[in-house]
Structure formats: C-alpha cells, structure tokens
Image (cartoon, rainbow, N blue to C red; front, side, top):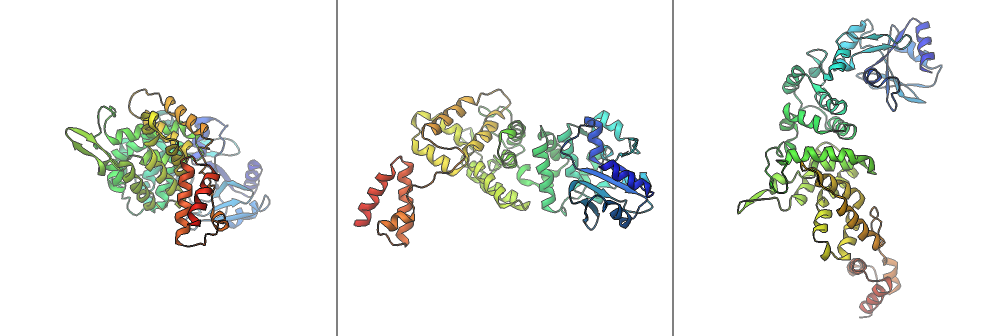
Length: 432
C-alpha cells in the first residue's frame, strides 16, 4: 500500500522517504522490522496536495500544531510529514533531527540511503552522536532520548554529545514527556542500567531527579549487599527485572517499582553499633515513590500499583526466612494487600541484584505452595464472605457499628474461620 501511495506522490511531482528510527532499525535489523511506527517525509508538495493524494487511500487527519503530522485513519502506524520549510533541501530536513543514526532517509521507491551526517558509520561504531550543536537547545528532551536510545540499542554516547547534554537546561521539559522517555528506557531496554548510568554521568539525576541522585554513595551492609551502594544495587535490580518483565501482567509497574524500590533508604539508613541498617525504608520508599511519579504526572493507577509493590517488596524473603512461624493469616493478608505474582517478580529482582549468583526459586516455591494450600489466587484479593446484606438479615441497622462488624468478620475469615462460624459469632453479638 505504501508503495502505491508513494508512486502516486511521485506522479504529482513529489518524493517520499522513510525517515528517523524506522530507517535506523531497517539498517540494524533488515527488512523484518515489526511493531514499528513508520515516518514518511514528503518533499515538493504542499499539505493540501498531500491530503488530496492520501484521500484516495483513506481519511487523512492532521495532528499537532508546531510540527503537523498527517495520519491515515485506518493506518495509524504511518506518519506523513512535510519539511518545516517548503524549500528545505534534503540535507536541511535531516539536520533538524536529533542524532546521526536517526537523520538518514531512505528513498521508498529505490531504497537509496541519504546520509549527510555519518549515520551509517555511527551505526557501525554503535554510537549516539548529535547531528548539529543546536539539537538540545531546540528540544532539551533529546537528552533523555539519548540515554534511553543508548540503553535500548546498547550503544555508547559520543563524549561531545555527552558534554552538550551536561550543558543542556532540563528544567522546562514537561513532566509527562520525561515520564514517557523513562518508560521507554525501562520497558524497551534489556539493560536499562546503561541509560541510568549515563543520566548519572551527565548530571541529569542531580539536576532533575534528586531522589535517585541520593541513592549514589548511600551505604549498605556489605554482608547483604556486596555489590556496593544503593545506586549500584538499583542498577542491578532494574537489569534483572528487565529480564523478568515478560512474565509480568503489567511490566510498566514492575519496572518503575524496580527503579524506586529502595528510594527510601537514604532517609532510613542509620549506623547502629557499627552496623548499617535501613529499617522502615520500604514504608518511606513507598511514599517517596508516590511523590516521584506524581511529580511526573503519572496516572493514578500506576502510582498506586508501584506504591504497593515498593511497600511490600521485602515481604516474600522475610516471610521465607521465618517460614516455620508464618501463619496462614499472614499469607492471606499478604494476598489481600498486593498482587503476589507481581511482588514475587520484584522480590526476585531485588534478591538477585547483589553482584552474585543467588537462587530465588526456594522462596517462590514455598510462597506459591502456601497460597495454593489455602486456595488463594496470588493475583486476586480475597472476597469477604460476610457483606452488609448479611448483617441486615441479622437485624443490624447501617450505622457506625456496621463497618466495625464487617471488619471484624473479615479478620475472622483471614484467621481461617468458616462463613458459618463468622455468622454464628455475629448472631450472638447482634442479639446482645
């Protein structure tokens, strides 16, 4: 279909090229690029002319004001654009792009590559390099794009580009745009630590994310954490979590929880009798994770789920260590507080992110067996056996005592009491 459209464009005096990341990925992966949006830049036509041509293939919609993009309603993965200046040369059009590996164009009809900034050579060198000195001034978000691309592609960042990032003002970037780049870094990279280390080196953590910056040089017990400070541990945890995220029903929550799970340690760390402790860092960290994501205008459900995982991230291992004393009620309460399947993935990443081989399987097997023996679904909260209608049937009128009775009934359920036992107890209470 695209070639038919492009041939139509050529028949009207225009010329169309694949551009941006699609060309980069074609050169890296060959023609089998899947699940990728396709950027197509059209030269020598006006927007009105292009819309007229595209109308033969579906309804065209113009989106964006500062940089208009034309989309076909039934092919949302295709983005048709025009140069900012109608008279722009091919080189000028490429110069406005961020990095050399993203600044190449491919003629859709003959496959010829136009490469004015050495993008193909930088692909060979596996390097992220800016096209012009003005790229970060034009859009400071490109600093985040550089580090997430480095992580996604396992590329290095050119020292000259890194210097520009260090000088780039970041304070005016909209929080939602930063969140999107962090999301790509965490979800699309097999080793997110590459990008996070570059954020540290470029001063982005210190300037924009002080809660993460505070993890650097925050000491931990060398017995439990031979890998080093909290920042080094966090980098290892996000990399382990990246390898587990395909098992997750919500990888975004898992990865942000991996990044933020120990964010409470700087505030909680103390040295007591020569021993480094961080008691309560899970509770403090949950609150700080909520603040961190709130400052980035994250969705409420993302914040809530990351909060829960951060708050509970220590429990699987702590329960396992005292497994001979753990009650059924404790297992039921855990299931009722958090998605234990997701929690186990985070706990595994935390357990293994220690700079040495560790086997998490005994922890997983024990907790799964305990939940299975109690008939619990690790991903579902426990449904109360006694509800308001049951109290009304016993003659209890809704009021201040109503909620207290329901809460106590649920506590009895968590202790293992049957529905009949709970109703009998309620009956005696209501009769009195």
